[in-house]
Image 1 (cartoon, rainbow, N blue to C red):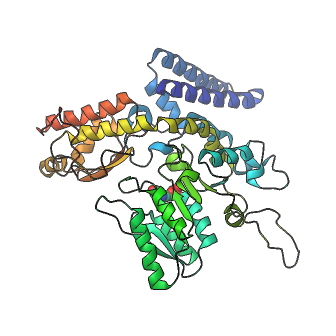
Image 2 (image 1 turned 30 degrees about the vertical axis):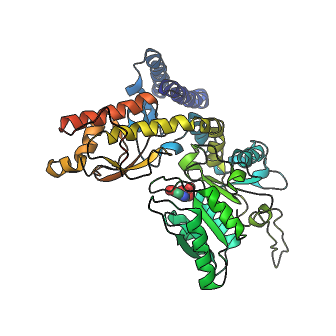
Image 3 (image 1 turned 180 degrees about the vertical axis):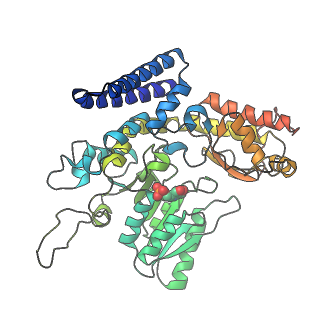
Length: 462
Ligand SMILES: Cc1ncc(COP(=O)(O)O)c(C=O)c1O
């Protein structure tokens, strides 16, 4: 959706808000000053809509947008922030946030068997089915963040002292989930390309078996890690895990919602995704999907009864603590889902843009890409200690000079002050914006007399 359409949508929404206030207040208005100010508000929104039509309205929109919690960064800037890109909400999700802000607003039509994933109005039950088929698994639940997916699986499978195999680039939340269950994390070392391989995973499993006399109870690997966004051989690793009869958890925090994910093809027993990282959804949200085989264990229902009252709690799922996401978090996720389901098909183009930008940076003498290259993700880590950081040493603003230069040109999101090793993300930026970012970096390089090799901008040296 282009910015103009989005603005129109937002202004319409603000207008709707004012209309609602009018509807509620008008019959009681005795105070002509109040009436006047409401009418003035309506006129202001009308003017914004006119301005948008003429293409002149953005600053005015920002004023009113502030009142309905619209962030100004995406309206007036190009944001290359590394972890926010694919979690940014669609206008539909923004609308859902307000409409379903009340926590139990999803529960009006909750009928027997009284569980979130069984509610059909709004269509939460079909959404769960769509989520499962989106990642080609059998059963799915929404969870408050990928970390709660790890937690549910670890709590189900891991007993005190059990080993769990993770990558040595695993996210800290995987460690916490295992720790909480009483398990011990064992990391697979990286190879020289900073990748986790199937062979290294097999060696680690053998090592654990030798040392403890027991096999690990779970292998949990990030498809793309959070450090470099390098792609790890999840399919090969799942195969190894299964050769030992160990279940495999696929961490798709950086994939589910941005590129196609086929859990069955990968050989995953569990697929975990993050709504606020990669599914244009409000935080905290995520998905845990599994197979028919594992669903009865990880989504087991309670056996508890009240000792005095003999109450039973029906089909409430233990690991989900009954129900998980409610209100606007869930409806926001659902509102973005049609767009998310569609956008995964654009992944190849997203990768072209990512590589275009990285190549543009590599063309500046002294740049290096720390992530694997060519890029297989839109998140990348780069090293500019050989160019921008040298300028920073002499500059009166030190490391902040680069952020100053970028934000002067409307580019934000890099870690302010970081001119050595830093991350950026191109996800969702149009070609026009990506080209503009590259041109801006080149302009800054020119200004500070750095060498640019425009013909040879595919230098991928590490
Ligand atoms: C690789 C990876 N896994 C898991 C997580 C946790 O995701 P969530 O915030 O949805 O719990 C993150 C968050 O940054 C991550 O980078």
